[in-house]
Length: 522
Image (cartoon, rainbow, N blue to C red; front, side, top):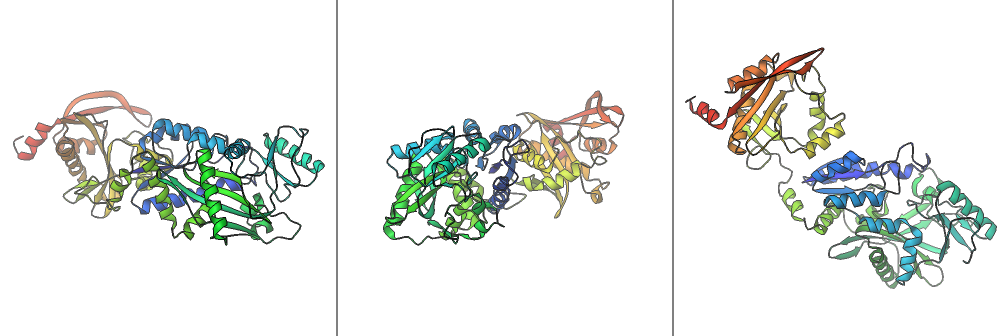
């Protein structure tokens, strides 16, 4: 099974400040941990930074682990990315585009919660600083279309109208979007992490945010408290899980979390943030977060999963399997796991052996080795240059390849690369490369070609196989002719070598010719 881990990091054209980029680049740690977790389960996984090329390549994967929260510098394109994956018909983790769009808009999501009778603080949207005000002070002012506590600080609480309108003006000018003004609920802050699958929702142990702050500092989880480790707000904001809640209050929060996710159409996983009002312990939903942060070292979701007895690889597996189940492709995980990550040469679809030579199918983890060989221009002087400019691009090419690509082994040593490509029901072309200099000049080319012919004719059922070699590539010509290939023509001036264009000699061999040669009747 092939899994793409899709993520996005905005560039210099983003509206994010240097400080706010802290909330964007944390995804890199998540990508690394998710890749490692999947590979521990014997699953091939490759990170893909979101781009048009990456999006179109997703059709070659069995699952997309979707961590993308935008496209390039457009951080409001998160629903569009999920929509593109959905159009491809590839299973993916996280919520569908409609839910991402609704949840991103805090005003719209709160209107839906109100309509469904789910407790949420009273609010207003301000598109100008001068709009009429009808709420009760104190209020909290925040951007209407941001997440990750962007735009929320310890100074976001307004206690009079002059202060309110100044804060609204700052949000409008800084973030170029409406300001959400919400009645501030004095009290405890908790959050509930949920798995949401085809068979219902499961609430993990609830977390509480404990604020060890001076009495005159508002107890809110602002940007500093969430992301800036050197800040006193971060250092004195302590999450605990499970939260010490009375059973009745805990049950009420779990019910509200499920109802809120259902109302907004959230799927896969989510985190719902609550404030519990002092005096009557009434919980209010303040935000619903689809595709929340699952960073292994600090996210509330990973903390809740750990409190439920789940290590990080199990959390990643749970999200992956739920996504496959949602698209009715759960069998893919079972089939992938049944191999237990083994790399046998025989008995499965991993490769084959030929005497002392072993041929194992290329995997994404082979990209650094192959990239080093492909970048050696002396070694590949008679080959077409690789189209992969980076190791990451080569990983994508490997996982998207429809060719029969192999790493060649001599014993335990990886010595080269071979491919049967441009395959049709009748024929294909072959090529090979001995990358390890210690194994060149030992006559292995002929053995490699013989092994590729056996694989193509016996295992793939081909009727003919063809190859080409530049006129100066004498070792390849000898290997091909020694394996029974016949010269069938010449492509003139088609291969560039330095300042010159050289002829390519064309060869082919049929199945009957190969079998006759092997039986000694040729």
